[in-house]
Amino acid sequence: MIKKKLILCVSLLFSGVMLFAQNSDSLNESKRFKHFVGLQANALFRQILNFSGASTPVNNPYLLTYSIVTPKKGWGLDAGMGYTYNKTFETDGNVKKNNFINDLYFRLGPQKMLPLNRRFSAQIAFHLLYEILNSDTQTESNFGSQITRVITKSSSVRYGGGPALGLRYRVSNRVLLGTEASYYFRKGQLKSDLKTETIFQGNIIQEDMSNTNNDLTQVVFNPPAVLFLVLRF
Image (cartoon, rainbow, N blue to C red; front, side):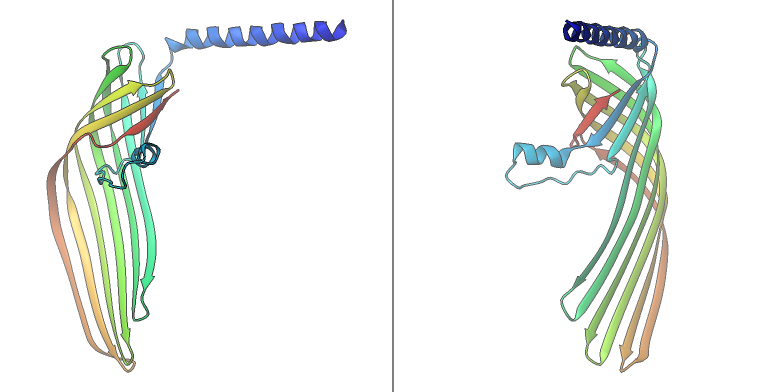
């Protein structure tokens, strides 16, 4: 008898908590902002669908996106970020190669969400861009008494902006699939330094150095080739 009452009390308490949570969630749904977190998922879908090994490069450095949107009018703020850190070492006995890449991409701007029907919605955004790219490559060729070292360093700081158009499909209440196209303008500088050393029997017999500083201006259209797995909170 006591066990039955305990089970009944627990059931009623659990039902009350669930009902309160649903009511609270429904009440807050019209007041709070909607949050969308997206992750680039081309590699994941390629593995799931098992395409024939052929992969088309995706020219989208923004691996992680975040949007905060007002539920009534659909206005909000959209941000994206991508970070690449890669350090590799290769050798075949005579030639050693060290390669280092450190790239950061960031975008931020206003966004307007447009519901199309129960499943599809469109997003129109204008992003401001900021990018910092750095790379360092060192190659050493050792053939006995003669060693040749080539050191190449490059850095680039770029900024710009442009519109982006997105489309999302609602898989469930919390999960969406999306893609986007963008038309971005970028401007900045590309600096590079090149140093070459030739060492014979422990002595430097030749050393050359050069550097360049070039202005960069580009306008690039990125078609909707990227897929995002988006979670709504």
